Image (cartoon, rainbow over all chains, first blue to last red; front, top):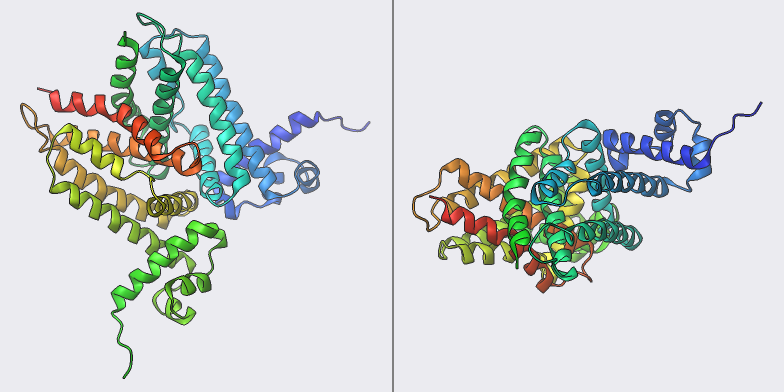
Length: 201
Length: 201
């Protein structure tokens, strides 16, 4: 009997494998046959789903964005006070092997996107959805009166910039930035921001 | 009479040209002969000073770090209150063509550094000097009693993370992030941090 595979499941398995390979070898060093080996499929299976290495990279990033959305979805179920937003932000930092790999792929993507309009458009779309979900939740934060959409959006931008800044430094200096230090600096940076936002009249 | 050139001046001129070329073509697209043309020198002059493309990239980054230090040195002459630190931080954002080019090279460098120990070590050394200079100044901020070295260092880390986060997003979405928006988000993020730091007993 032929092996029946779910195309979407296999695409995502290949994308996950691409994250490990880019993590280990960098973007320039990542080869399609290494991705195939890591995904336990043939090189033909990889090229069946993806036209070229750029397409695999884009799929890897799409997989990372799905994981970010999953973390955001878990946070949605939680309470809407300052501490919960701080805990959620810390949950996006590169504090274990899996998230460190995601951040390394993300930075490799940035490096390539600066000179590639298409990748930059994709990046913009990803950030738009991430900001949107966070803005929705910030608008419902516990405070005297609900914030305007604009104020919540600006707070979301600031929060995401804080996470990106701490996460980038920690990704490039993993030995010097263990989880505890990352959380301490991010908490110091966003606690006064969120406290002021939650206390606004 | 032979033309006498100052080696250090020529190296820096080539490094500056490399910033423009990497800015325009990305790291993968930057060729030594384009750098030579932009610097108005022969390709032989470039290879005389630099062994390979990586060496040119490293020189480009060293030039950017020199410019950051120059901006920090200008700030040193200024006052040591919260507003001055905010203005200084905003001065590091990608708000004009020259600084946008620097940021694009910086991001391209990150993308390569994630998989290159040597580049990462260089990056760590650069950040160490930038943090050190900022920490020195934060320790002398106007406040009831001088902060500990540790507290000032942590505040410096947070400030630099905030600049990196805002600057990265603006570099990747230049149309959506004009100077005004960058300064607004960065100011919102660091004003409460610096205010709390300056008010600490």
